[in-house]
Image: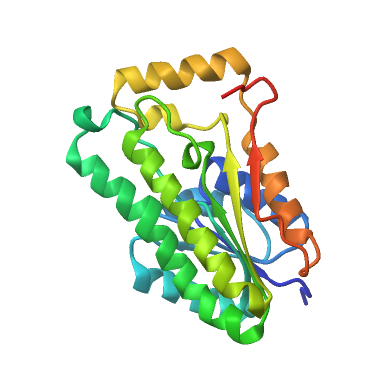
Length: 240
């Protein structure tokens, strides 16, 4: 019988989400992993893990996934709100369909998952929500216009939720990675944005998803009466 509480990780099929799932599994936590494709989740082959193909835009699907995992492992004690996309471009050059996807996944998706776990955490007076943002949530960058807006949103919502949940001993944490070695460039249609991102990555040398995962696990494993409200993790050589 696993005596550690259930941890939910969204966008767990690749990048930071995948590395975070591996880090928490190695530490002995049962997991609920969600992503739009079930294959990459199952390919992780982690013990004590429920894998569900669930899109964070689908609130009912997220609620159903939580119910399935909680039936086996008890209530979600930690939500790692990681799912997100990063099609980058200047506002005037970007297809409006990309705005909608950015807002639906990076904003509404974050809200859906927070809203799904907060009432029970509040009632238990225990829990941790870790929202994965970006340094682009505190500073604007060229060709990041709408993406930056969604990440500023994550910071703002997290600050409000942190204030509201503090008296119930529920922690709301923001982790903001800098240049990270993920497949983000593969999703970029805008060539100027892709060149800006890859140039920065090549100049400073990116951190790895595993670096970010260790930071997330460290923040969660602090005593419940201690909160690392915001953590920014970047390559040492990243000056901006």
